[in-house]
Amino acid sequence: MADGLELREVAIAKGGQPLVRLDCVIAPGDVLTVMGPSGVGKSTLLAYVTGTLPPAFTATGRVLLDGEDITDAPPHQRRAGILFQDDLLFPHLSVGANLAFGLRKGGSRADRKARVDEALEQVNLGGFADRDPATLSGGQRARVSLMRVLLSEPGALLLDEAFSRLDTVLRAQVRELVFQRAREMRLPVLMVTHDADDAAAAAGVVVTFGAD
Image (cartoon, rainbow, N blue to C red; front, side, top):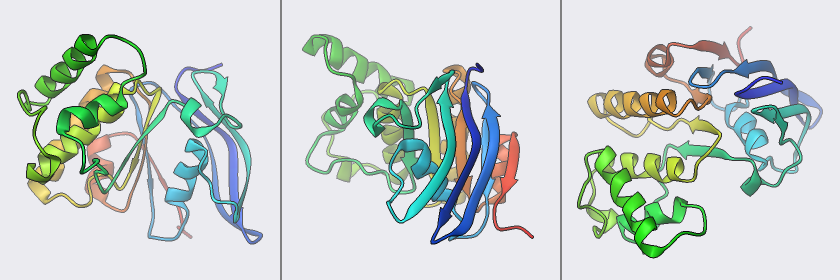
């Protein structure tokens, strides 16, 4: 059994029409980029990995994470962290409380606060724990979202057009931060995007859906 994220002969269809076929292993710290226009099944593939595939789709094949078959596991047990193009921060919670939401249950309040504060320091947001998310810039919100996912201790990181709402300069900065953290934590990364710059920055294998 291989470490990393394995998609073993995955095939997804809708209404009998094939959408996705993929057979690959993403090693720890590596990035597999899936490209293609809207509607070809990129996000559908991520939904299958996370266990949230809508019932309108049918799928075969297995999903393994570090050798464990998670295909039939409920979403919360799959250890697949996902970042979307929208940051999805809870508006009624402070920045610190948003991060604490990512932590696993258990541990003292002091320990949890220390982990949140450390995470903020790591992305140059020290002292932001009590801030309202609405007061953050787009780049700051993206960094908070990333650290919330990483604090949940995922075994793999999925990126669903995660950088598409950021301007060019900010996009490059946040993208490099995400890939750097993934390498440091040895997380396999499955990224779907329509942007060739994202694929180039990932410096990994690129699969194109919807190509002739």
